[in-house]
Each structure stands twice: as C-alpha cells, then as structure tokens.
Image (cartoon, rainbow, N blue to C red; front, top):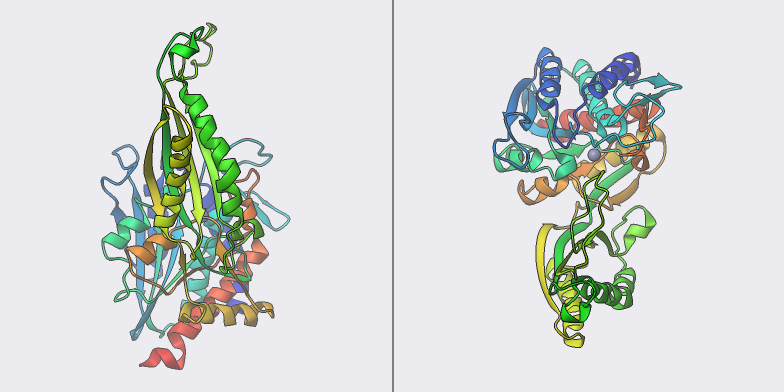
Amino acid sequence: MQRVDSKQSELIALTQDLIRIPTLNPPGEFYRDICEYLDKRLSRRGFQTELIRAFDTPGDSEKYPRWNIVARREGARAGECVHFNSHIDVVTIGQGWTRDPFGGELVDGKIYGRGSCDMKGGLATSIVAVEAFLETWPDFSGAIEISGTADEETGGFGGVAYLSEKGFFNPEKVQHVIIPEPLHKDRVCLGHRGVFWAEIETHGHIAHGSMPFLGDCAVRHMGAVMAEMEASLFPALAAKRTDMPVIPEGAKQSTMNINSIHGGQAEPEAGFTGLPSPVVPDHCKMIVDRRFLLEENIEEVEAELRGVLEKVKSERKDFRYDFTPIHSVIPTMTDKTAPVVTTVASAIEAVMDKKPEYVVSPGTYDQKHIDRIGRMKNCIAYGPGILDLAHQPDEYIEVGDMLDSAKVMGLALAELLTGPSSQN
Ligand SMILES: [Zn+2]
C-alpha cells in the first residue's frame, strides 16, 4: 500500500498521458498510438507484448485500423494468470465542457478529460497496481496480463470479441479477469443485464397529401404500435423485477427505450429553404432497445414484442409490418463465490475498512464477450471512478480513488499469485 502511495505522481502522469491521446470512437482514432505507448511502458517492466489488429471487424479500415495490445508477464513459477482488461476508446466529446477534453488537467485532486473516468483512469490504476506488486513480489507465481482493447463503446467486436475468438481469453490461459470500468472503488460489479435491439417497420401506401384516403399512412400505423406499447408493454416491463443487484434502482426492472423513429420523407438537408412535398408516408421505422433481466430469456423478450405487433394487426385494417432483430446480448452474472469476487471483496475490506457492495451494470460492457466467446465465468468489473460521470462533459477521475483502487488491485494480486493457494 505504501508503494502504491509512493507512485502517486507517476499515476497522475500516466493518466494524463493516456487522456492526451484522443482515441475517439467512432471513428476509432489513434488506437495504434495508444497501443505503442502502452507497449513501451510495459515492455520496460518485463512484459511480452503483442499488438493485434482486428482485421475486417466493424469499423476496421486502413484509415482507422482496430489495434489492440495484450501484454503478459510470467512469474517465477507456474500458476494462475490474472488479467486486467481496459478499453482504450472514448466516446465523442459533446457540448458543455469547461475544461480541455484532451488536456488531462489536474485541479483539486481531479484529473479532467474525455475518458478520464471511462476508463483511462482505470487502465492507469491497474498498470500502477501491477508495477507496485511486481516490485514487492518479484518472485510471484503464475502470470499477469494487461490488455488495452478497441471499440468497447461500439460493441467490442474489434476488441475483446476478436481477442476472445483468437484464444486470448480462455480458461486454459487466463483464470481471473478484472475489468477496471468505473463502477466505484468499493463496488464489485458481477455482470450486466441483457440487450435486445430490433427494427420495426410499418408499411403504407403513397398518395397525394390532399387525398390521404387514397393512400395508407405508415406513420399512423406506427402510432397504433406505440399506443399498444403504452397500454400493455411498458406497464408489463415495469412490473418485472430482478433479483440481480442492478444499479441504479430504476434498472432493477425490465426497460425499453425507443431509440429512434422515422417516417415519410427524409429530413431536408441543412440550409434547404423549400417546403416539403405533400405525400402520404409509405413507410415508418422504429428502433427499440430492450434491456432484459437474468430471469427472462431472449425468446420471451422477442415474442413479447411480436405479440404487440400481432395484436395491432388483429385490430387494424391493412396493418403490415416487418420485425427484424438487429443485436442481442445475453445477461451475465458471475457467482459471488467465484475466486476473483471473494479476493477483490476482501481486498476492498482491507483497504477501505468496509464491506463491498455487489452490483450489476444496467448496460453491457466487454464481460459479455469474455463470458460467451471466452467461456470464462471468473470475471468482474472493478475500478475507480463514478459511473454517472461516464460520457458526460467535464468528466473526471479522482486521484484519491485511483490510489485506493490500485491498493485493492495490488492486494488482490498478492492474494491470487503469492498466497498458499498459488503454490501448487
Ligand atoms: Zn467503459
């Protein structure tokens, strides 16, 4: 713990350096630069590093190649491997900033910048924790891995999903995974809810806007779909409660967001001053984002939505629709008795003198790929930072939180890689 404290200025400098590489996604900029930066730092500490481009994954191109880094440090003898996985990408800046989004300014113990909280602060924390551990226990058993991966913010296909398919995450190679997402320094995040996205399209018939009775308005059909959702679906979702410890409280129920709706003519281009033409819309599209619980299964979720459409169809003349699932993620929750959970939980108690809170994330993150493709159940998200600040203007991370989290990670490493159980 003292060694972590002695590295405070190094931790600040590392976090600032990472924030100053503007790895915006989309489109996926400077991935190679940040991987090379991490490569330089970790190679110096005896890590074997590999830079891996996720060729032909969504978004990968010569202009925006999807680069990832995996670094591995072998211990003095065989044993288990602890892997820290952080995503290197950050979301768009947005409006409302009073600080330089890529300046890494340090003010009153807070480091500001896009990605400071989500999750370059967590990445820096894990690196400093590992370095403090290596200096304290140079002859540890097993291995430590640190990865920086692409595209978490856009689904993780060019990052953790790709690496899982290539065998980087599998129970023979890696036994414990910690993802330092900003869930707060005294919380262990066990998993996440499920996702089901679908496109609903209603069809109509085009006609002159002065004689709508000669056409069939696709937007009115969609209005009927929305009315049915309000009448039956939303109340049904609100009534479903999970035993998963999802945060915040509102996400303990099933939810659905209507991401977008569009019907009729395309919006005119900016600057166009003409009037729209009078036509009856012959199509209308809606994207829904349904988040579901461990207690539900994806077939039910899909059937429920189709049920709404079939009900409208049975009541409404000439109602025609298409329903297309476009994306899904199965919910996951690591068991509270899994070794990575119990180890990090007791480290939190040792550092912060309080029992950890167990939580489940309302949205998904890269654990989904580690679970489904990598077949690894011993995985959590644990890292410093306040989740609510993620993706906000003036996002920041507190240096004190990073130090506390680094101590927790260091103690967890000591327990997993130097304790009696690691000597077999
Ligand atoms: Zn994140």
